[in-house]
Length: 547
Image 1 (cartoon, rainbow, N blue to C red):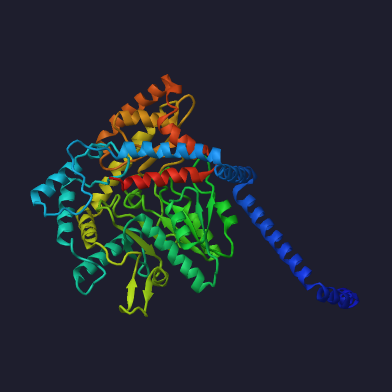
Image 2: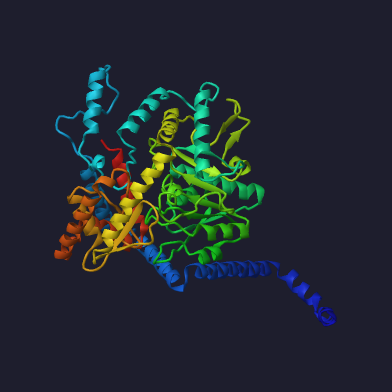
């Protein structure tokens, strides 16, 4: 201590002060440059610690190469060639989707005169029966989570009863308010909530996730004083987290997963957390591979760093909570984990409610308050809404309540047994095909699989399409997945048979599948400039509204 004081006493403070006073601008510039260099160095070290050197270099190369291609595209000659190819890809999408049907009228303006009920119903009947994937006979992965014809009739009747009801006006529709509150409470009970836990309904999993992110972002800003909040998610987390990050202009860090299990790397996630992190995420189960992340370890991280932890159980919904009781390995994905602050669960998937219903749950009311939007100064009166929508459809809430009441715990338990058993059977069959292998460690209703040379997995997808199946393509790694539903159960053996035939067909002609799905997904996986893929995707969305 004495030596330190002596050293400070001998330091020529006057000379230092003189230099600073004479050159304040240069001193400021030097300090600013040093600060920026230091910040970039810290960011670089942090990214390497999260992604590893090899993956970090690969990401850097992709970014640099993508940037070069992006600028080359703006050169007159090269840009024209690229745009022609993009236009051709979009035209192919339009031609496959927007098909003129002989004798079918296009309604491009409100009819001048009222159509009769019979005319209207005839048009709707024809539109309903337009050729597509035979989902009613279980040929589609996920998409339609059917609870049976009897349940469908009941939920349709409930829908009709509340088709004009709007939960924005609880004074006008008090019974609807009670139904909605009971839906939330029933789902909370399913996820082992305490009396402090609460939630709201939403229009689907995407909105549930966006609301959970908003709640944690607002909590970080208002309760923690964080000016630039960020969230940390696995690369396998639902794209809705990226949508939320874009909507709210916040940082998002994507954490790699274990290549064998496809579970998030908890150590990498720990290294990614910083003082601005407000939320980490785990899935039960992931959409790509049907895998449950190590939620207990993530819960411990959230407690250690005093941050939020969201469990995305939109796809696990009414399957994962029943796994243990149904005789399968248990996955704890609920409020029994002390670090969990929010959970999303889709009632319109394995809850068998009509599309447009989901529930987002919170550990306490204080956190739920950060989800709300309120304004007290609007000339139209005090305005408050729990979610993104103002007016909402009361019919889907009533139908959701009816579905849950009709199914009961016994019904959901039996469906869990049947659906997960179907997944297990499909998984075991895939494991017997030498050219295929399972991706990750599926735990519920979804199984993903990829292929070994000489079989191209996207070729298998095209062969399955020829046989009437619609499986979902994955990437990084290239794979297919099927989300088993109630409709899959009776056609499980048919799928296994057609899968074996499809693999054999691709193996017999490995060079015959360079077009089709391989051309699309192979291109998307290799092109560094993602804006090219974005333009094609935007063209696809445009086609949805073409007539």
